[in-house]
Length: 223
Picture (cartoon, rainbow, N blue to C red):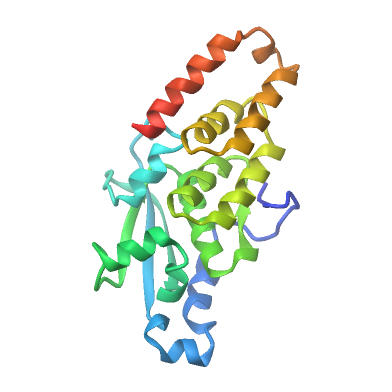
């Protein structure tokens, strides 16, 4: 079920981009609409029917930002932002000044529906920071993208969300991202969770085994 970053349930499914597209242009003030920053930039998102990469948690998100094509597409979505909104991300600001200069949009291919929903959530946050919605299945992708796009406020909120919702399915991925990206607070929460966990999958694991798996994930993320 979709949740806000505060952990409360939300009635706004992340798969509904139509509101984002309309607010990006029509919702601007008259002054914004009249200036060059009111020009819009279109993101066409789509997912591939090919199998996702093995480094699912992070590499797919970064590959999408590089515009890598991956074959046929099973799902599509469109998000439209003003240039002013897009420049809230230092990463995108540099893209607009470089390879995206003069372009009116880009097409990004993502490996899975989860990555597409995460991208929608992050782009949505650049339009309205109060509208961010994550799910248990997208939280690590949203965190990775927030770091990649240098959205520090969103990253901090995601770190808190991930820390409060750690479980046996997310702990290794969360710790690997935290170690690779220098998120010390989240890393401490992960180690604390492992130490006190009564989950049988971890009760029988040695510290060395967990460390090896995290190191492998870190290498994938940083590679």
